[in-house]
Amino acid sequence: MNGCGRIRRSLSKGWTPLVDAELRDLRFGTIRLDAGESITMETGTREMAFVLVRGDADARISGGIEARLGPRDNPFDALPYGVMVSREEAVTIRARTETLIGAGSARAGSRTRPAVITPAQVGGGWRGIGNWRRQVRFVCWSDNTEGNALLAGETVTPSGNWSTIPPHRHQFETPGEESPYEEVYFFQFSKPQGFGLAWQFDDAGEMDQAFSLKTNDALYMAAGYHPTVCGPGATLYHLTFMAGPHRVSKSRVHDDFRFLLDVNSVENPYATQFAKSPPQDGL
Image (cartoon, rainbow, N blue to C red; front, side, top):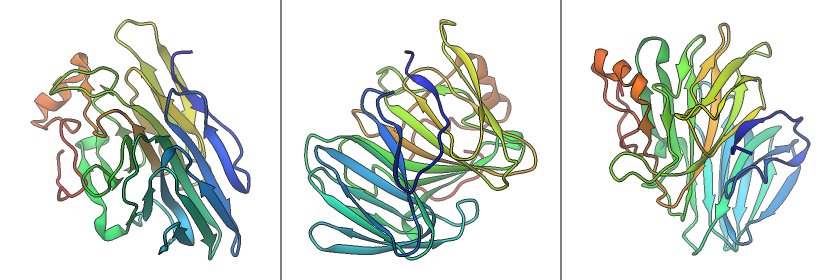
């Protein structure tokens, strides 16, 4: 097992685990609820982040914290709501309308304060240029929530455009350039015919694989580079969960593709990423 791959599975009502034992630490699943339905999730020894993909719901965290998540008609145009909770907590979610939530978790050595993220607290902006321009959103990030390892964000890629470009890797500890973390992408397309492709590869040539992408697919990565492209005719959204020892997103751009930054006078979009940074073009 190379720690990279795609999972395609129907989403059940309630909790559906998608990435469970494929990675060392990071886990991911979805919550689907009809109006009036509810679910309670126990975190145990793990911290969890919940991101509302679409719908409208109320969340209650043990200790008396209550918040409304939504409404959010779709993830392509509307900004997200999120909840970050620590180990030894319980979260109850009750849907007001049909609701889809993505949830990631990672092991947590210590307890931290819970946080509810509204659209006003979401950072990010546009990244890239030309046909690799996309919108990045930082939801449960290192500078707007507390946590041990877990981060959550989103990316919206226009029809025909590439995402996660230039190809980057977050596998090794290289001070100032690269920090190791596992990652999961969960995909949605704005039309039922929507599709995309992902390429996973490494420097040694030991991993070289590609996957088709459809709505509700999950792509997981513990190694290598992983550029993704959206097919024509639909917009691509992917929800991202990351887990690493430094709770930071810092990646190494592949040497062969650094020219994309140089010829376009674009800074490395993976060098420093903060939730509270103002939206910027060309980053």
